[in-house]
Image 1 (tube, rainbow, N blue to C red):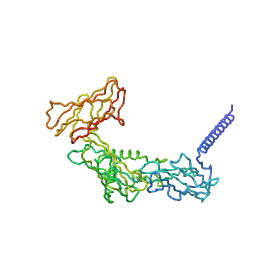
Image 2: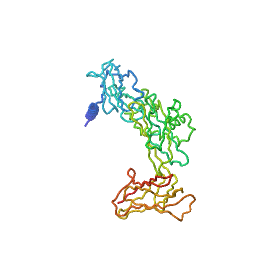
Image 3: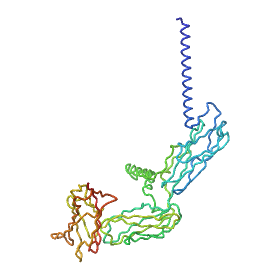
Image 4: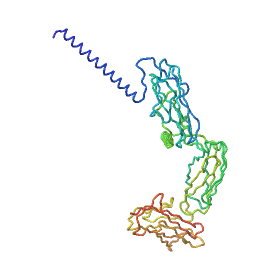
Amino acid sequence: MNFRAIAIVVFLVTVSGGLMVHFRQQSLTETKKAAADAAGIPVPPKSGPYGKLVLVDEPLFDFGLMEQGQKGSHEFKIRNDGPGFLKLVARKDDHTCQCTLGSLGTEGLKPGEETTVTMNWDIQKPVTNFDHAANIRSDDPERPVTMFRVRGLVGRRLVSNSGNEMMVGMLSDTKLTERVFVVHSEIVDAFEITKLEPSTPLIEASSRQLSGEELKTATVDKAAEFIEKTKSNPMMMDTKATLKLKDQEAKNQQSKGAGPLVQKHDDAEHPNDDFASRKPAAKSGNEVKVVFKSGFPIGKFRESLIIHTDIPETPPMVFVFTGGRAGPVQILSTPGTSWSPEDSLLRLGRFRAQEGKKAKLMFFIKKSETPWEITEAKLSPSFMKFQLTKDENFKGAGRDRYDFLLEIPAGETPLSLSAGSLGSIILNTTHPEAKLIQIEVDFTSY
């Protein structure tokens, strides 16, 4: 083969290879375009003229303050400032709330023409702040995706920073126990507490309206305030404490169920600010003072206070108090018996129903003029039995000792008593300061 023939062969191979690459690239381009079309994503034309997406107003709308259950709507305007048509698409999987586009021509938005992006939202969850977004896709090669956001704070008509339950602890027998908390509204400018309804006569409650400064002080978020101060003065606390508080703040926001964003943007249109840490301010509030009077039963208690207000369309708030009272009675466990004085709970553990179970507690009773006796006993389940024996050899100053033996008879039906369905022992006694003793029982027989 001469030199001319070799050159011809090389030329043909090169040309064929180039054609194969060209057709392969064209095939890949067509495949990508087909995939984009199938996904509803506009693809810029191969050559101009192109449309140009311009925002007529801000892409971020802050609605301020709304309530759970309310619905909102806002229109954003888009204009085509390019020489070509502008295609726009609002896909369902590109937004976290309902989003619709205004009227578009068959070829898209004409040069100089405007349309709207309407976002509708419904605040269904009891969140602190609401932040949702929608992505609009276009065939503008310089702006294929534009994010629109709506956000704002979600206020509550009646709330307490203490939550709806308070641990009172052990009541004192020498002085009255008092607790104070604040209920406030993030919606109404003023309200009155019309009625305080305790679950027992042993609770006495009163209320008073707070001034603006008192309300601000009583409802301030101490952890958030401390973190804000440390941003400007990191020397106020060490790094570990800072990280711990920030981690707790992040968990608090996550537990409140703040709505997720479609994606993050750090540009001028979607600024990075401290919105996630913002909370609605208290507009009005009342201080509630609760006094626990003498006479509470020995053992654990759980009582409530129903707070009625004049806030329209707002149900009463139920505030729960838990605690206990030891009084003139001290109950101690014996070896092999599990006893929790804080919870007034006797734990018998797991045992075979055919074998039964016994447990012994020691009662130390403050002496009184009347000999101490149990006048009535209510046990649940009813097959439980008890025996009370005075220790005549005990010589404690001002106290008597009694052995309290509880028995689960052998052969009873297997039963599981745990949190939410505990057994109970209620003892009525002759002691003037301990007329009622309550003990809860936890066990599983099989």
